[in-house]
Image 1 (cartoon, rainbow, N blue to C red):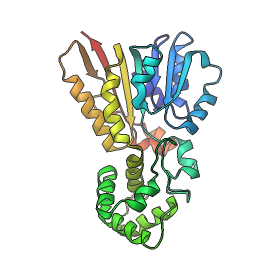
Image 2 (image 1 turned 135 degrees about the vertical axis):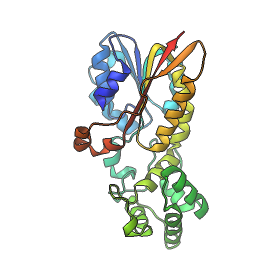
Image 3 (image 1 turned 45 degrees about the horizontal axis):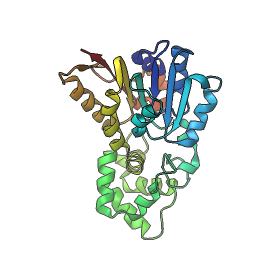
Length: 293
């Protein structure tokens, strides 16, 4: 969806643009192509490991890039540090990078038997293993149901508690197997692994992802110049619902700075892109623009 994102961001020569989730630098590189040497890109990511990938991809363009290893909740402070009050465009891509998914040591993927971690930053003290092995059954059930929208949350929570009574659950593979057995085979979702929603729930819990989005989106809109644009790519309904509600609330305000929603419905990947990149099938893009009265 990179071309569509860049189009909605309305990237053009000059100005200040922010990639709040730089990841491996894919979007950042395309933004830089369009804003040219007279523009400035601020690239932010809380994951130091993945940010090194972005630095490699952006080599040779250091003069008009500022890179920050930070949670995007620190956007306001970063702009203050750079003495920038308003920006032309802001991008949030809320999905995991390929690097994060394929790094067995991170525990994001149920396809590998790596440690059950899921932390996006070393500053986060509690890993997924902590919650899996320490939350009581009720709180596990609530977390899996709320953050994963998993209808079998109660069965999964019960199975986890029974298994950890035999010994600590330490790997992503072990947890995935527990979840697989907790859901009746006839009830497995057709297109995704039965552990997908539970792993999503744990990742959101560990990294406090929804709270970060709720906190930062309204502030980010307030940091846009006249005609400044914001784009958000979400990958599950909980994220998309927050984005939709924030955009709706801002578009309903009658203040000096108006907000216009540019995407009546979320934009999704084309069939061709879904074939080439199956992960894009769940991506939803929403965009908006600030219009000063």
